[in-house]
Image 1 (cartoon, rainbow, N blue to C red):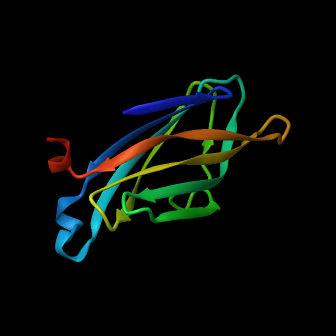
Image 2 (cartoon, rainbow, N blue to C red; image 1 turned 180 degrees about the vertical axis):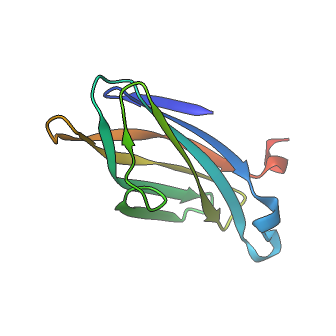
Amino acid sequence: MVTAITQGVKISVNTVYQEEYSNPEKEHFMFAYQITIENLSDYSIQLMRRQWFIFDSNGTQREVEGEGVVGLQPLIEPGESYSYVSGCNLSTDMGSMSGTYLMQRMVDKTEFSVDIPEFHLVVPYRLN
């Protein structure tokens, strides 16, 4: 698990290789990742947008940007957390992701950026 704290928001990431949804012969490797967002601040916050940078070990880079996560813009109260699971496909057996969330402080509508720490997507046999 990797974690990072930015402006009172802790982001933790766990990854899992999805062998049953992958097809290495066709250069298709599927990974799932679980993100937990913990509000360590004194204010209610809402996740407004996400921006991902996806890197494949063959040099391919992608950027994904949009509203919320998995179709939601969760409101997270002080001391609470929100978790979700999503996925990413790569054309190689190794890669990485990182990014940012645009959050909004509900008390004054101030927007701020939270870092999503870089995490690696690696097929288990590559770790031996």
